[in-house]
Length: 133
Ligand SMILES: [Zn+2]
Image (cartoon, rainbow, N blue to C red):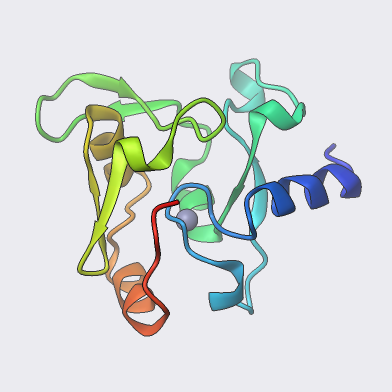
């Protein structure tokens, strides 16, 4: 059980943005972004803030308990992006409202989290451009 104080800390640390697709909570006011376990409990993850990230409901739903995926370019099994240990801009870039992987981890995370679902591309087109900070 993640307490309210921890959830607040995670939300503020993330700057109120999804740590996977960078969408702002303010741009989706009718859905509350969720505190998710980077390493799911079933894989030995815990409730320490070092294992928690803020995720939009789209990314959280598609990530589920996944830790890895298949790189669409090479077919290799590759770990998903870890927002506590890795830099977003090292693995991803945003271009024309779509997110692209710069690395195997980036490509695989874009695929598993379905980051370029049409609803997400349409949302990005409606809001201020997302930066990659
Ligand atoms: Zn997201």
